[in-house]
Image 1 (cartoon, rainbow, N blue to C red):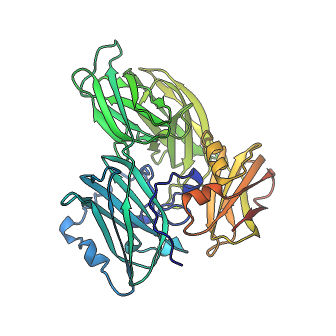
Image 2 (cartoon, rainbow, N blue to C red; image 1 turned 120 degrees about the horizontal axis):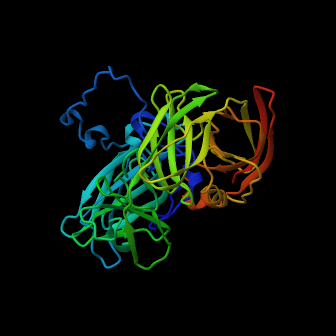
Image 3 (tube, rainbow, N blue to C red; image 1 turned 120 degrees about the vertical axis):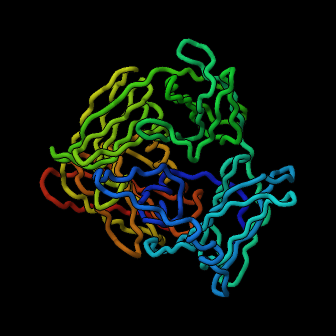
Length: 466
């Protein structure tokens, strides 16, 4: 069925991206198999004796037109990006990602990424050689807020013209960076976006807006979104500011960032008392998942954050299993108060437990994907969007997520679930659903009791399709 050409940006719930999985060169995929933006996953530790692997020369990679040639059995997407005043951005990037049953069989032409530059005042884009199917698109650039296009159909032998897509220029943030004693700090990197990510020593400057403070400590950031934002300043020699929350709205913003000395946090992760490989995250309490620093343990379970601003953090260790980093794996979380210029020790042990086998049952309608969330204690949500908002403040120990493509499997297994009382919520969606449709999908939540005995315990959750 031919669908109307999309022309609006949409924002989406976390549940739409509930299961980030490692799929090799295909990149991160969401529960519908679409490419998503996500913080970089840390690589597993390797022995010091492992020789480096040389990357193939860039010239050996064939042009995209050769890898994904136009043919009678493929489709094309075209259109242009222009602002409401008719002007065009100087440059932008765009991705076109196909959703189809069985994301494990995706090939490189299902997800294409390109860079474009305006020519003769027009910012046009073309994607050719696309296998027929349902596609979503994302546009990004220095002059506008990321633009997501709702899913649409690409037919074989046809060109889908999206027309003129109108991005939002967003808001502007102006501010100053000061040293601990209140003097202007020049040459300091400033980071702002709805999410801030970092590693054990620094903020990451990918998928965020960045600026460098001038001689007077001043900085300006443009094209910021209209939702809640966080901004922080960091300089290895001068210190790091707290991540400051900026309110949602349409008005431009101001902020003053004061640098302070940093502290360190180190410890060991164990599973059932034995050293374990794990991803470890540090999140400032109160920021939810919007500000996150990540590192990985070595083969002895040791981890260390070398530079964190003083304050209270939620520290979570999540097991690295089956060659994968995943939010579905067992986790343990603790809070740690970190003082500047000090190193704090914190060990985390992830207990062994039963495997919970979850069987989703369609009570009505049809669905391609079922996503589930297991939350410690009592929990309630009426829709996927409600579930997303309520979960924003929960750590990964309290909330475990996973999903199933119903054409591939009919049950979801969560390993090492500690005995206790939980709430299990399920949401059913279809391939090609827009993020707005997913946000409105009904969520079913039921109480679940995990017993101390029984290595594998069964539970059902009824979900409503459409």
